[in-house]
Amino acid sequence: RWNMDKVYLRDLAADGVPVVPTVWLECGQPADLSTLLTEQGWGRVVLKPAISGSADGAWQADRTQAPALQPRLEAMLRRGGALLQPFLPEIHTGEWSMIFFDDVYSHAVLKRPAPGGIFVQEEHGGTYMSVEPAAAIRDAALAVLSAAHRVAGGGPFLYARVDGVLLDGCFTLMELEVLEPALFLSTSPGAPERFAAAIRARLTSR
Image 1 (cartoon, helix red, strand yellow):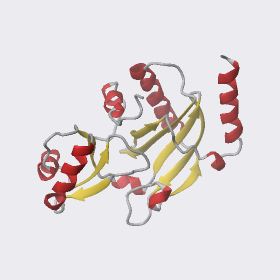
Image 2 (cartoon, helix red, strand yellow):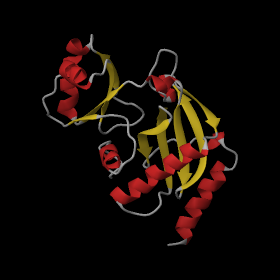
Image 3 (cartoon, helix red, strand yellow):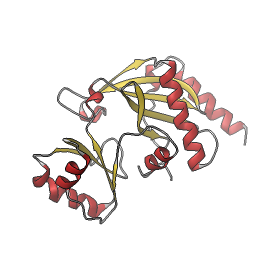
């Protein structure tokens, strides 16, 4: 339940996890898009519903578009909470997705948006490739899982995907997915067997 609402990112940031800078907008909250961009000093932003998957309902805006898109923001906030984040050009270098079973690293992919796009999901034209992250990046992802256990309680996640980009060389969290993520099992030899072994271990321990 904790992972359903992207407000979990605020919990992780409070615990010290580097998270993409975010302005949190509550459902029904008055908010002026032009003012928000000016206050934050952001020229281009991405807006996301607080509860969504696969970039559903997400959109982008820049300062010149903000006045015309104000009604879209108001409609968004009538339906639920939202996140306002700066557009990160680093997304074109690639978003790391590291997959863990029972908090043990399994494999990773690097996802990129289509040319001219900003979303890395396949349904939005994004692509992915199998990669092997450096130890420092894997360690940063493990630190995200440790923080999640501290703030949400509970033991290891049966499966988890830690998504982020490198900002000035620092792994910065974009999403922690522990509900229904794509696990990219076909990209790594042995990944399906590792996942099956984790499931089997859970079942036999009960």
